[in-house]
Amino acid sequence: MELPKNLGLIKLPPHLEIAVYLIKAELKNKKFVSTLEQVGLDPALCSVDFSSLILKLIGFESNSDKVFDFYSRLLESSTNDFDLREGEELLNKAAFKFYLELEMEKKKLKE
Image (cartoon, rainbow, N blue to C red; front, side, top):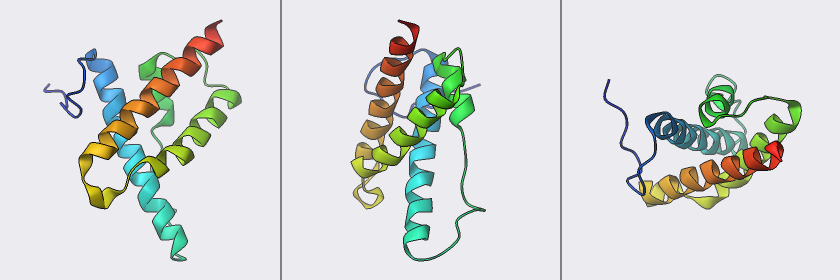
């Protein structure tokens, strides 16, 4: 299986490359869904949720309400970090930043 080479910023283990790739897809979808909501359309059929898979790939031991709340807030705020019309570079950076925030939260929860 050939894994996605989506970022090129640093070398990550394959399971984390997949996690960042899914984060990127989820960020892009969240931006799309938010835009549909802004123009008054119902985006229910267009939304995806990779949160459980992403959290498992990154190594969260528990998918508690606290973890999902953090994830949801981070997803909402991260959509402000890029504009899809400006190309992939900002989206890639936003996805990697999202990943780093999740890693920091995981570390905090283990302490």
